[in-house]
Amino acid sequence: MRPPESEESHAQHVSTPFPRAPGHRSGRWSRGGRIHHFKGPSWQSQRDDSLITAKKTAESPRAGTIPELLLTVDSHTGTGLLGNVAYISRLLTSGGAAPAGACTDGATTSVPYGAVYVFWAAKR
Image 1 (cartoon, one colour):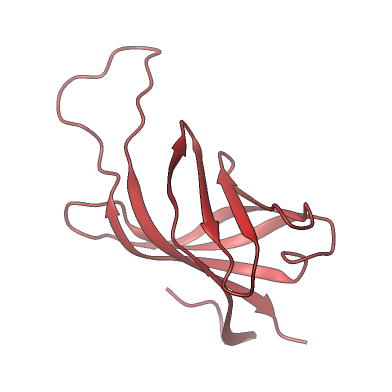
Image 2 (image 1 turned 45 degrees about the horizontal axis):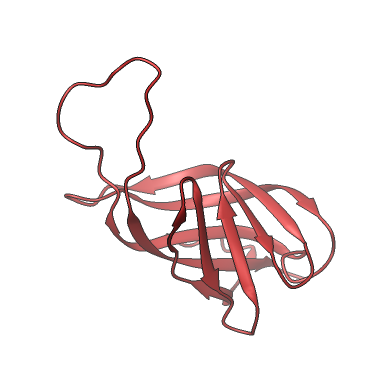
């Protein structure tokens, strides 16, 4: 899942999330620092507090796991580490499939998953 040709074709950031607390995951920034991933979907740099949110642009199903995604960043807060990110690819997913059985109205459950996130900067 790659961004449009109008974007640079190099990764700025790669992280692998891991369960931390319900609804929250963290990954290591390839250039130093930690990125916090949480509901929104949102990502926030723990180094400089820059924050982005994104929406799904495309998805590619994977058997037995959550799909790979291309997300378009729709909001920025701050100009730090995440300040130039325009797209995010969620790749090499594992786990995260909904549990079998009936759902209970209003109930939530955490389902661990893994993925590699690649953050793409806008072409300058």
